[in-house]
Length: 86
Image (cartoon, rainbow, N blue to C red; front, side, top):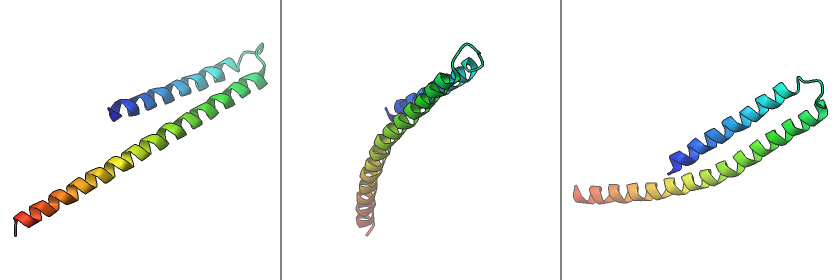
């Protein structure tokens, strides 16, 4: 399940990169207002950063919680195994 989330995060960032590249190419056209293109570039970068920040914070919390649960299970298993070997 989490693999799909990480894959989508990657695809999303590739999409933001595509928007950035497209805006850069559009900026070469003299009939477009450079300040407007810059504004859209900045908005795109802000959206990318905010979205990544939110998603990675949530994923980081989930991963930390999972690591804690797995650690507790491993320690319990190791204690059981140690008690059996005595």
